[in-house]
Image (cartoon, rainbow, N blue to C red; front, side, top):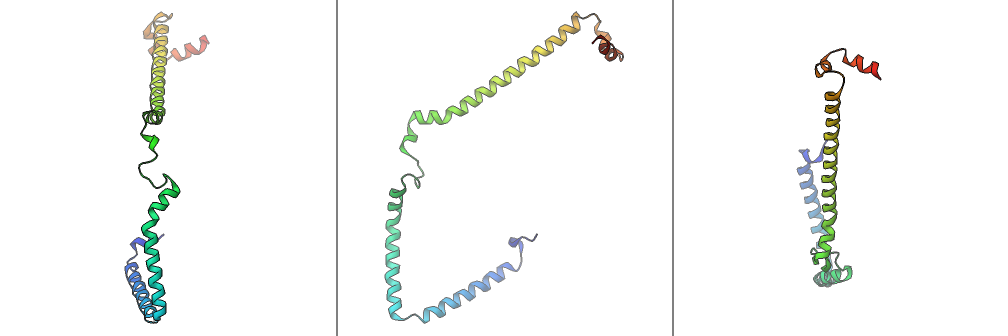
Length: 139
């Protein structure tokens, strides 16, 4: 699949399109009557006036939606603690799980060592190739 960003003809096509668009706009501008020009000026003034008043109105209409600082209650210590509490619980749970797994591993290793040392066979017997067969017979 060909990527448009690497197309070598793209800048030329865009430049030609921009030139055509600019030419058409200039032609249309020359055909505007003085009456239409006055109406466009008035509309432009209204749009600029609305734009100047729009941010304050939009912010009031939407509350904290456009505010980067967030609601005022974010600054309270209780809200901050409530936001961090799940992370603390998660870290404590992971540490407890690690401790449990480590204790379980130590317990299993100790059971194996105890069975080796207290068993009927000497430790050298466990290196014998026939040991697996012996274990199967005992079960």
